[in-house]
Length: 201
Image (cartoon, rainbow, N blue to C red):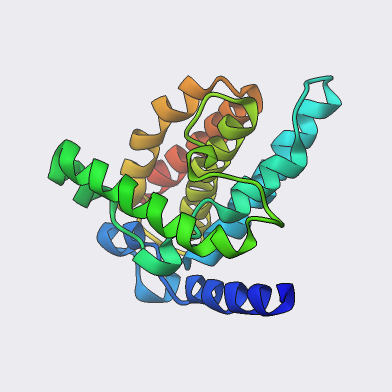
């Protein structure tokens, strides 16, 4: 029965509320400020919704339902795999990255297979492709991380510890070609740089 499938899926997804995003731990953020994968998915989805509605308001052809579904599900595989740090895949090279992608794809398929009749989405539609919807999801994913940086800095975190998040994201966001995403990045970077300057005074 569909009810049983949904109950099982949601209970499995509950794991994401308890899994911390590893990047903040590696950066030296205080344990009280760690962010869960579920919190990140919510933030990304909110940003994706706003960007999508803005594009639609300007006359762009975009499927907001698709954007929201991709954004909400883009990290669902971490309910099985946990959050694998970017630094680990960088150090592991091409083989590590390929292995991570394969594992995520398999976990995604296994988790969503019981809901195939209800949802129509594939792992390769998770914000890494070329469609406008995928680009919006990818931009929102990166921007949520930067919004969290600013929130941490406002709560007292050392902005110098968090500079790498902006350095690593600038080109990635720019290449997506989403005007509002670029504007948001510029604004957040300005706030970050002001926090660094204030820290040094």
